[in-house]
Image (tube, rainbow, N blue to C red; front, top):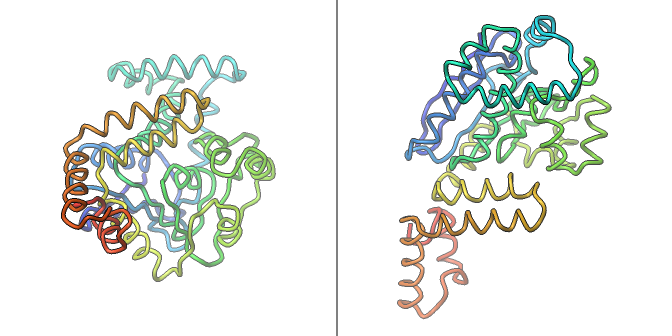
Length: 310
């Protein structure tokens, strides 16, 4: 079983995905990710997370195909409509801990596992910690989907691969790949990638926007931690509000997305951190006669501190 090992570096948690010999994602990795998200949601000392792989050439190879095959053989074959209804029911039952434990011992265990994995990634998208994927090597299938759920992706230069090869196994991506790729790259490019199943090199991934930056292997982790530390100094309530507005509001019709944005704005406006930052901004304006947002030194200081007056 895989595991997620963590160490704290200032306000950044470095989380290493460990599952020798192949670097596969499995139930143990998912358990570790859930524990990690549990922690960063409540711990005010954590502003960001860097995810990286322990394997010398892989972030996460892909999800363990043996687990998927066992799940396929243990449950009945159903069509999309029945599967959708079953997932909806499973999602509702998962809110009751005893029901979830009971389902995990039945042929519905696969439904529980996929619902749980999706919920973990959605919690990453909603929480106030910034998630940075430090792709130290290849990331295919579930590894790519985990990276897509992060807020920033930095990939090592080298002979590595990233993509969604699921169609070559007879099924579509199931961990969010189709949806997050479509939102990140547009539906046309996302569809071509998942229909083809072929991987991209780091340079190709950067060119289309699948990753945000490349770094030499020996400097990747330092670069990722530096980015995470900088963004992790922003107020967590504001970070969470921005992430929910973009990830959830961005896929809604405009009027509904704007309503979600307004709700997040109003909720964050009354936090202590927001009030302190606004007061510091006004104090600086009164003191200097200039708007801090237009003063290069003031804006640079705010960017470094994560807020005005920080």
